[in-house]
Image (cartoon, rainbow, N blue to C red; front, side):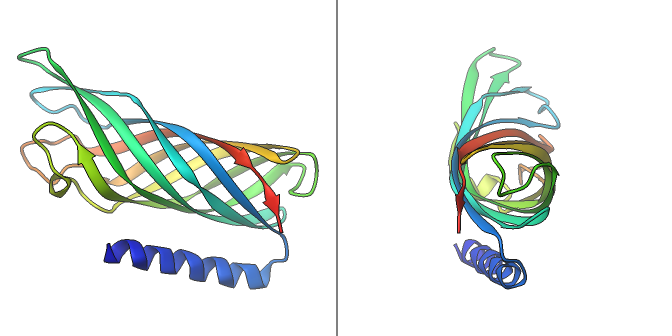
Length: 195
């Protein structure tokens, strides 16, 4: 919990500093869907992607070049199929995702009715709970650090952001369950509230 408090404090401080330097800002509440996978299959089975979700928001500060920081509650969902029994088990990892990045408006700007953006940055995922057979929260690395890149489309007061995220940390702490790093495709949509 202390790591989460520190991460939120750093995010708020960065947003306040950036807010003083730049005049234009918008709040972006949104919901999204995630598809998570891992870079390796364990020796006793195969991991496949399942749909998860996220809800939260971000603050975009700037004009053509911008800073954006967010806070989302997310579920990363995967299925594990045992090689020996052929049984499938669902694994849900719930947590707080904190993306922080920079972007650029390729077409349009934040004030117009249409804009196309590209962005990238870093993220932290802090696990709050795990729903997986025979596993607990302590079996997983938390926080996991990652990098992401994506593109966004703004149409009037609505936005859609698509991004791909690569974790830099191994998912499992257990040497017997080596599944490598997490990789996620995230589609997020919501409204833009300028202030």
